[in-house]
Length: 429
Length: 163
Image (cartoon, rainbow over all chains, first blue to last red; front, side, top):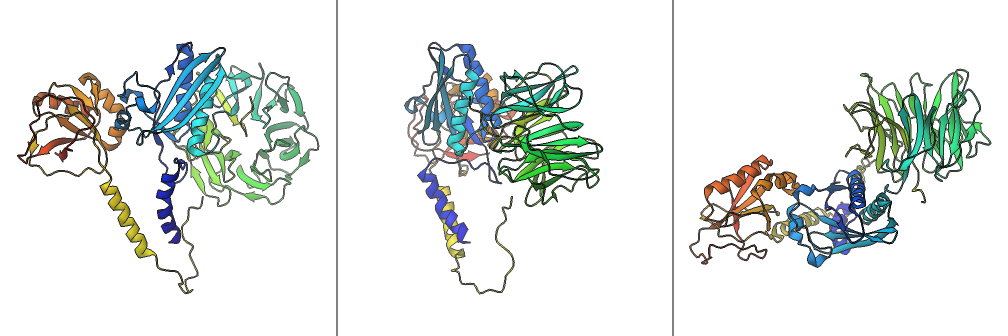
């Protein structure tokens, strides 16, 4: 009761004291209605890069899950309206439902594209944020991600996912190749060319480890973008599914020998490998680290069917985490620590995504009746989950909020995209 | 994620806290009063409104206001919109779509057919409720010239009557 009273007294005071922080989770969450008109193109900047900027910027805001980006078809503001509070007719923005208005102007400055972003509160007409960022003129998407990140931070006081990197596999014919790309899947760079390379994972330092069949059996290799692949783990009959600890100093992977597969933990260079599971006939695979690096979740069929288990990183304290269904796999531990996302196959043979709370065991369904949805991976801030889905035919990568809302496809061209992995930290470019 | 409220158990201990329930009630009532009396500023185009004896409806929040002036020009707020565009603009309008409601503010000299066309466009855009803004029939009406001019500072706030 005291807390209620306190919150009643405090909330109005906080609202008056500072700009609102969007509360992203909980039952009261409502996306912020945001008007984002097309950028104003100043002298020098060309229209094509402005369009590229615009689509990347709008995508970031839309997919973030915290904004309701308003339909430009509804806008009634004068097309020649200015960038400053004095020249903006705020009532026209209020009429279309906007609570915030974000305006961007783009100008070319030598070899750099300069973007200036201004954020206004529609109710008060006040300018709440003004930032300028530069990017090479041929990288308008990078500028878009940087400005969208500034806006996201303003509202949430948290880093956005927009500057992070992902890795994934492209299936083309009989080839499976590993790519690294920006968070939205664009600007992709191929690491391998031809052959079978699967299950890539990004290390905190931006390297990619993956399972490769170049020796006709699965081994683990590691590669920097633009570099050569180096063998990391070639022991056993099959080495698969590597995961980096959050500090990047250790790896965990599954190694099959005979009729069993065990989880091993080794230094990041593959040295000092030590088995941390020991089930004579069971399969233990798909390790994923807790954000503090102290625990590992993994899949084991020791109880008869594949289920998600949690143990300490030294193999002690094993605890079964999922009890529903008879086929749960590909866990990914949220960087916030509370949830593990996983894929479950139900009795209709459809794959769907769920999260399980590590402490309470509470399971939450994220997808349903939308084709197969697999391979969840959390964004570095834990707010979003990327996954592969065949809901529109071919396999494609989609992203949604961690509670399963706002599911949107990545803006990549058609193709067959699989097994995304989201970096654990924004890569330094 | 454990949003759980109070703790259960331990029901036998003596209550030593001040009973704050009445205070919370007072606070809530105050809050509601503030919400109700929050200033209601409807923007739009100044038009010569018809007078009716219909009971006014108290609006608690701002709605999208459509206006038709004596020259049959249509406005969303104070922005002029071609009649052909009205449906698209309203269908995309997050505010109108969330409320499913707009207010219509038509000059008394506008032919009935034009009002119906605007209402039909709103209906096609998925707006199920069109509130008609009228002037209360007091007899003490200021002599407004029939001309309408876009103005955002309309003094003499109109009362809304829904039907």
